[in-house]
Image (cartoon, rainbow, N blue to C red; front, side, top):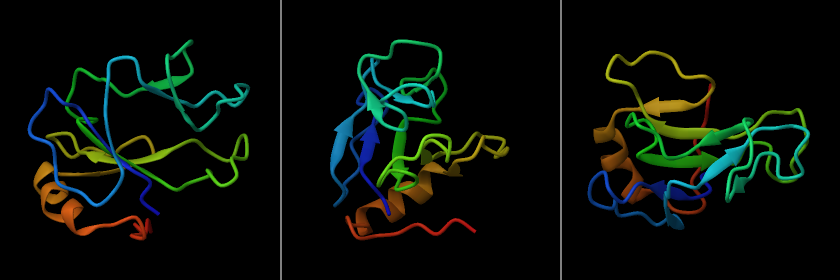
Length: 121
């Protein structure tokens, strides 16, 4: 399932979406430290090395949709978040996420609501 839409406010207009929306701020991160009680959750502020910073210099996380992976309930060690995000210009593989071109997100996101599911094969 698609959990929410996160967007950087400084990198373009807000995308219309039926998903719950949140702005990405420089202090947001996702915890991927299995030893942390906040494992596989959005954290504020980040406190260590074992987190995925959401405010990046590249454009990959300008738009992020966390997928419902290992989040109900969270099982430590089963894997941290899978994000649906923007791909690199070279379209090289991700480290476990789903990445698409910005045009795809702009076209598809407005049509997806809270009951939408993204199948990863």
